[in-house]
Image (tube, rainbow, N blue to C red):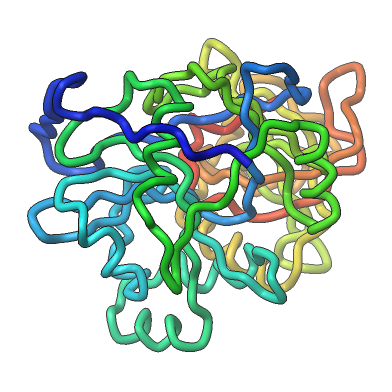
Length: 331
């Protein structure tokens, strides 16, 4: 485990942080999918199956923002007292619901979209979240984005942010051992971070590498196929460098009744008359399809790709309502 380094000397080494505009203070820095990097220049953290949160405490108030920049403060009343000792700070983390000691994204789904205070408070009693903090981006009003990860991490560990509903999970210096531990504990994977990496808001940087135990990809829904059920399969794609939606295949596996109902509820308002795909959709997939505007993202597990770039043995893992279509990984 890493830690024990000197806390940053804030006032003497950085200029004060100036928001200047309303809304989220930053967009989260993103990791690039890849193979596990090794060597002395990397640290390793567990990858958690939850929802990304940017946390800002300023002016005596705390606000939570989703990955897409939407304020979700009402959803998590049990986190309201986080960081009261730090009057002007921004943290990055992941919110999870733990079941039997492991994150359950299905359980978290019921919490993510609640905006009614009374309902959120009831759910907080029966299905509380845990916030896992892994970065500090601003502290005492000072911008830390240009500080190296190693320094930001040491600072975070020294702040004493341990509570009933939040914690700073460990970071390690042995990549293969971290991967093995994540497998043993049935976690989603590992994120490797360069020790000298700065915090790059909204950038999918090779300085952070995510290694998942199951091969998955985030794809954009361009339509669906009805059949014996109202939703039999999704038609999915990825944006190319020119912004065209490239067809990647049809996905029918993995959808529970609850997930299918959620998908139909989200897709119905997006219906359109023509295909949103820039590439040809095979006739067997296009026949009887209901087309939608390409804004909803789903995470899809798959075995590999065919020579023409289609998914083999795909199944839907979850709906990524927290991720804008422009940030889908694609393949």
